[in-house]
View (cartoon, rainbow, N blue to C red):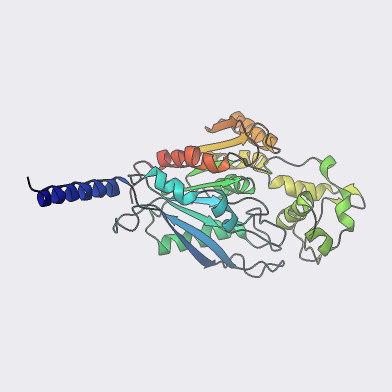
Length: 339
């Protein structure tokens, strides 16, 4: 065999090997940044924009399998954060790529629900805006209308971290016609707040002081804006949990009415209609008691669910667990779902 022939064969073998490697490696997941207008958020008293940023992470096969439709996982971010911050925190695109092309590929949608006080609590409120309706109606309708989705509840899941875990359980209970499976990561705010936690120091604060406050301060005002709104009380347009230094039972009752553990018995058929429910928490998570309380209540009510207490805090394992726990959970949920 002459030298030219050997070189040709070597180049051919190299090209074949490169092609095989290319075929074996799934394409990158693609991220689209959108702005979705929400009628539900329009006209809120805080002035939160109805033009909401949304990230849509499309799986490896989306651009190649042009006739294929995909299930959708909605992921809700945590308090004081934004959708953009979570794109830097959790490697959604890398996780979808690592999962590879397959029959259970899914679209992941990460909407932004940041508000004046750091978070909407995924609730309906004239003060904050109707963010519950934004997610369950405006956003789902937009995604189904602009992407190749399987537009039915069995092909829609919802997950979230911290405040997003709270939103996951609340929206799942209240909108079982929209979502068919739930995964709450390190959820907060699931159990009613006792009267002794009502702090009168917030009564004397100005709006500027409240906005410049530390985490617990802005959290208190965010909860009030979402769960005890009052359009007659500017500039906060909400009622606090204390008045003249004493707890206000009616406001505490409003807050308790928005606690998913307290709501669960009223929404038992919705919870039992879910194909799967999971919640987790770290063993050193500062809100671990919230997940424990929800787990205990779901167990008492006979609602099937997975509960995972893992070694970690409120956020250090979340990026890894999205790929190792959340995606496999929904891969199983979506298995066999057809348009």
